[in-house]
Image (cartoon, rainbow, N blue to C red; front, side, top):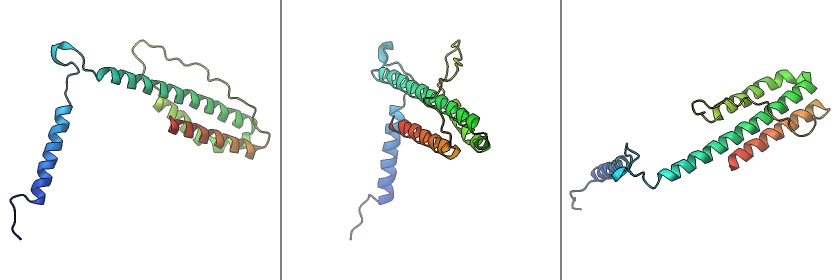
Length: 145
């Protein structure tokens, strides 16, 4: 077979260079286009930022409800409290991590979490199962969102 001037390595290198050039061209450092006008995609960024903030706020609220539920179970069944501490701490850390960044001068908004719906089961094992089910519902809702 006769060999052409194009090798597999050369074709891959050229393809990579073209892809890198396309990526770098699309990554402009200035948000304003010609004439000082904002590009059309800046509105999409604002909408995405609002949607992300709303999702984060909902996740924080749901986490606060779950923390209150952990507190109720630990209060109703002190024998389970030690085992729930690490799980509750993880929920609290997730809440801190998901909290949307605040603008300068914006109040902290440290409101008391709303009381979770429903009483705690009298049986400790059932109460922990209900807590686990609440965790799963929260995770499923977050995944769905």
